[in-house]
Length: 138
Image (cartoon, rainbow, N blue to C red):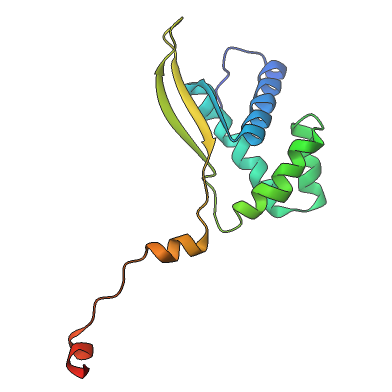
């Protein structure tokens, strides 16, 4: 089976996943059930990939999936595409929270990964240790 049915028919499932995708993109983090989060990851990653391509066809595909929400598509193509331009996939992160009180279903937080800037990565690198040759030259 290529996807999870989530107990809904095709139209309802597609609409629910489009709405959840819009919420993740606009809020950068949502809390939902574990199975929904795992299924949602595919669609959020696909939308960001469309944004990174940046052509007209990708914009139209994103608009078609997100119910013509131009505000969300602009966020994808302008902000998120620039944030993840050096990353090849894996734009979302799923964190398990625990069980929901009412029905004990597993809950998770799905959020966009915070991309570190290049300067911050360079600062974290440890300083080189002096080799024997450099010590002898001193």
